[in-house]
Amino acid sequence: MIEIENLVREFGRKGVINGIDLRVEKGDYLVILGPNGAGKTTLLKLISTLLRPSEGTIKIDGYDVKEDGVAVRRRIGVLGHVSYLYDELSALENLRFYAKMYGVTLGLEEIKAILSRVKLAHRMNDLVGTYSRGMKQRLAIARAIIHKPKILLLDEPYTGLDLNGRKILTDMLREFQKHGMTTVMVTHDIERGYEMGNRLAVIIDGKIAADLRKEDVSIEDFKNRYAGLMGAA
Amino acid sequence: MSVNGITIALKDLRVEFRTMRMIVTMVIFSLMVIMAFRFAFLFYSVEAEPTIIAPILWVTFTFAGMFGLVSSFSKEKDTGSLQGLMLCPSDRFSIYLGKLLSNLVLLLIVDFAALLFFSVFFDFDYGGNIVPIVSLVMLGSVAFTIVGTLVAGLSVNLKGRESALTILMLPLIILTVLMPAIIATSKALDGQIGDAWGEIRIIGMFALVYLALSYLLFEYVLEA
View 1 (tube, chains in turn orange, yellow):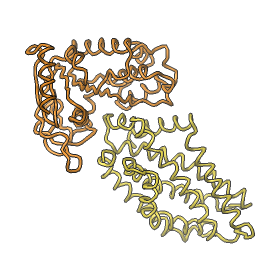
View 2: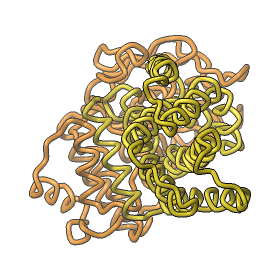
View 3: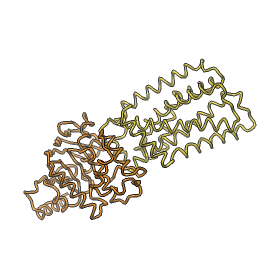
View 4: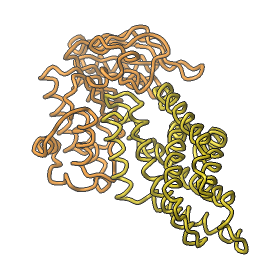
């Protein structure tokens, strides 16, 4: 569960997050939309402890991101448009490295099984620098879930993925949903966001401008509301 | 040292020895510096002048070492993998420790290469003083790397980080590490290592002070 209260983040004098209150229940799939510079990625960085809040609190399963950063990081997996992988290491070496960093003991067969899920087992000994953008993103999916996180934070996760990669990611995210994983996804793609999420939030100027359950709004209604909010902003 | 610190250091060294990106540059740079000093002192015998030998060695170690420090965070910052490390469930000080260890290993390799280059180009025999000299080089390098890794972390988010590292670091090490190391090495070359305990204590004390500062600050350094 994610609990955010009166969250403010300033860079210098400029407020990027300007008082967000948000509660994401276990098993929720929250999709966050908004224009460029609205504060979506900053919000994910704050939740994932990459940035510290200027004011307010964020708690993950009761752990405060400021006070208990290690406990928070143990519970989250992050997939962004940057892969966090090392080009000079193979896929196997990358996953072994991150498994050790997360305190997870994985044998070769277990790593192979993870790589098979993202269709990369046949390339596991090749340097990641030789991978295409889509292959790197698929490997990044494996990296993000290697420690079996309870909460998945996704920042434009479909960027750079081809059709096959999109299907792999979508299938995996649906499987995680079935198992009750909590997910927060930032995206510009309204249709994919509506398709994947069970809750939709719009951030404008660092504030929540809309927060809707999927069952309360059709895709067309949501698009119209979103366009209205964009026009008002 | 934390387990994650060792894991990061081993990863860094694996990447470095696979690509030889920095170590070759650092060793060649140290060779160039030694050769430049050789030409500067072409008609001068340094054999009997430990007060000249020690600064040549420490200037070489310092500037070659800075090459390695600049890249210790910057490449990962540019590729985004530094955020990957920051997302791992350990305190940020373990990232510092990992970088400290890998920087130290690279610097010691360069230091030993520079000692060898000096011996060859100046036709100099360290003789019975080699053990105290190597010990001082190791102590000074540990202190240098403790400061350098902190400053490299501080400067990684700055524009012009390469020059920022040099500008920030030199004032921090000149009186606390560099001068005492030069004086102690001069004494060791003169066979008087027993007289160098004052300098050794200064280096050790400041190394501990900077390590404590790193422990307190590093949680905030990478986020800046």
